[in-house]
Image (cartoon, rainbow, N blue to C red):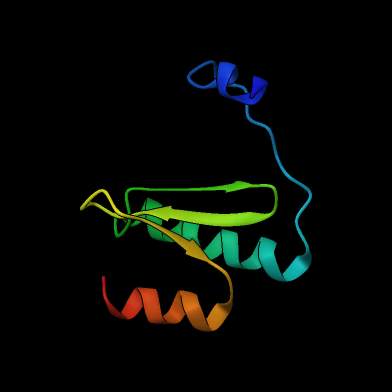
Length: 72
């Protein structure tokens, strides 16, 4: 995918997310800033979270996100 060529260049591509998903993605970015998770990103509207143990989890709803946070 051509957006991968931009990695490390300082250029970011923002997806057009629904209001609910944008809020959820904002919460995952906050967790990244707090260093609770290693990374977070979106691809085709899906939110992914990379944990410090290397596992990648999809965040599909607010309830799923809350459950994920309980195990961090």
